[in-house]
Length: 124
Image 1 (cartoon, rainbow, N blue to C red):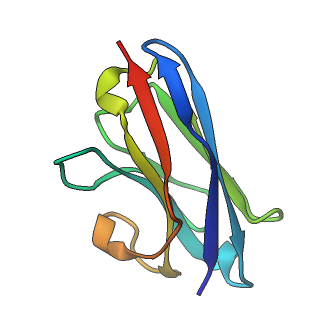
Image 2: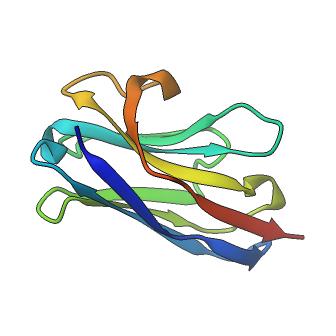
């Protein structure tokens, strides 16, 4: 298993930018696909982006396509989410998460290790 800790987040005006980072501990990080998942009040969790374990593929939700950019660094055991042109509807708790080694990463339920979450609030 891996332990995940998020950093970043905060309050920003609509149209602004924020960067989230996640640091993982554990020797299996480089074999795990990772993702960012968010949950807004009263709504279901949404898989915002998934990054394949080797970094060769990144899948974005339609709601963030073209505005968010995800990356990972297996040497540093980190992965980031750059969020641009933020909208009030992006307001949520954002969690970094990791799937089991070499397994699917397409659904929220695929992710078995989670960080504690960080709040992102976008004001209009």
